[in-house]
Image (tube, rainbow, N blue to C red; front, side, top):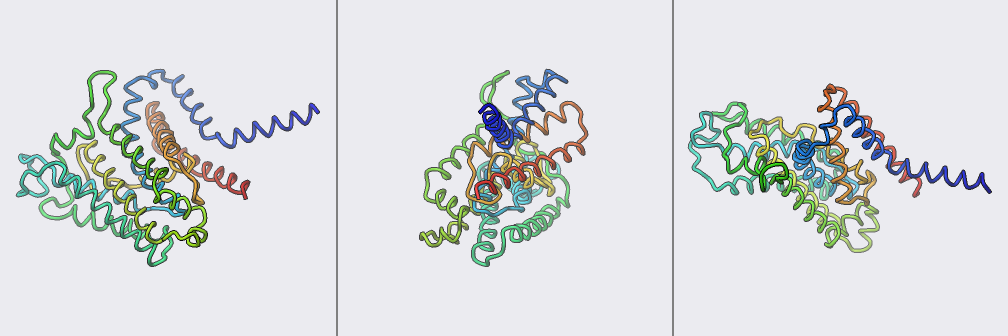
Length: 342
């Protein structure tokens, strides 16, 4: 009897470790960094982590839409870069020496922002049409879009008189979205964090309270069963890719605002971080499973890893190796859980 209890307890511990291994690693990492440098857990450090997480969270939420349908999106980062350049190019101060559009009149700040979001939405529409109507696998479809969008962005960025110069001199009413905050002092709340929280709430509503959200989970769980149950799979996929593209567009705007500039290389590899954050946060690579809180936790995990390792002076190359191991481990655990359910 005692041995059976030990076996049962051992299985429970193994199950808990398998389920929460990545969080255990995170806790140990945070403890280790804090022991090495106790100031890591200061208010300023936590605020910086949240600011860095905000745009990544919005991108990851867009990617989560696609992953839940059992797809993938490799174009997210390049769409972020394109929309960052589009918004920044139209929101420079009038007395800046190297204006992208020297004769462009003063625009309401929301006009270029909305235009950039629409650009992202159109890119998502292209992805959706290629996947849903041409039946091209999402990996290939979004790979093609990734390459094409980078080419378009580079051509736009290289236009006269800019000629591939980094875009700077952004207007204060635009950079305020990325650097401004409510309140002052230690407990001020950055605008960009509030935007990310608001977007997360809207996405949570879509996931849990709308017909599109229910259809999304059904498509990811079993696309054939979804078709039999009367779900218009192609139409829903197009809507999902469009929403994801709009979120990438918003993230691009916020990234330009946060950094005070833009180049055509913005967003490079962001899609991989977003996919990794989703998987770490419990979004299944096989589709049909994923939550908004999980995605947000996954983003925070990677932000803490990035910021923490930089904080204690670990080489960026080691950080890439560490992140790669986490991605492989997260997918391996996900596949083990999927195999156990089968």
